[in-house]
Length: 424
Ligand code: PMP
Image (cartoon, rainbow, N blue to C red; front, side, top):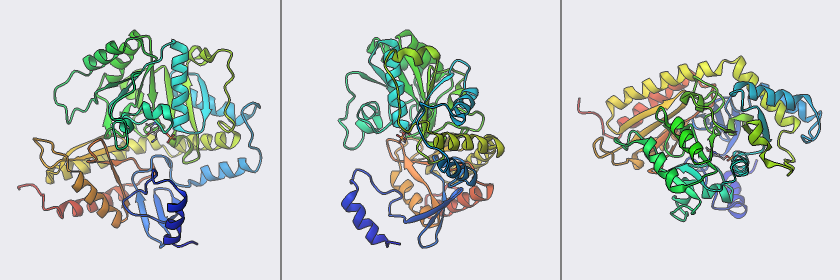
């Protein structure tokens, strides 16, 4: 095995600096098993941030399904095969009836690209609406549709003329606002739009569940302007919210297009777009094809992920563990004023750090210190949000109560070291 300095030399030579190393220092990871990662020196890390390995790193059932299919057949979707039709039928059965046509692709970015293309083709409009702080993918077009990128480091600082940004509906930082009116105003100013691309719980914007009624208002004003509601489930889909398979179900709204990614393949590169027959047919005479999207190996893996979610009752688990985790974090919030807010649904949780609960001055430095200490104690976390002061928690769904107990105990110890305890 190459040693760490050899790996870093080669990495620095051959991999762009645009791709930074996570967790504040290079971790030489050699193996993953369920909710744990293992380093070359044998250190075990509890992974609380990887929502891609949804049913657990290297889940044996998913691995076996992929290996078996890989040894039998891997071709493209211009052939008829069981795994493909079984897979799209199973996903469709979890969605509202009208979202019955699926496209299978290879990444969340690719799927969002297709969703926007479908919206433009169907509506004849071009402009798009997104939410402040949102991230939707790494292609040129999606960077232009991601305020997280164009407003962030290295970005242009302002949207393209065809991109319209709705303020983030952050009920912690923005006490008084009427999100319906904000959506209405932004869309009115935009004129005709192709669509509104939105996550049902905001991830990069700071682990923020949408306020009740938000998607309903988004759908109403979007339709009024001739557009389609596109829900990006890449981060929160497949039962992470616990109560439902999909984040949008929390809001009781049926989108026009749904985008699935990350957890869909438990780490195998897969994604999907599901929509109505009418919208799917708007590509018209033009052929659509992906060389590897929906190949038999991907379908076998996708089917195995669905099997595991069902067999291991992972939605119920996410609900119960999420509640337990959030309660434990709220107990810490009572003890440590630096924790300004604890929020989330199921196993999608955010902890917002502030120096002052009145001014809400962000405590990004303290959040960074805590995640560094947690890392050195064997628990991987990271921060997000435009102010870099929100610790995000979105672990593989096979987490246990013991993992949460350990995390809460270590967080308590780390927070205790700030000296910033409550005035009891
Ligand atoms: N949408 C959201 C909400 C995401 O978080 C991401 C990736 N972090 C993407 C889309 C893009 O997915 P991918 O990296 O698979 O292209």
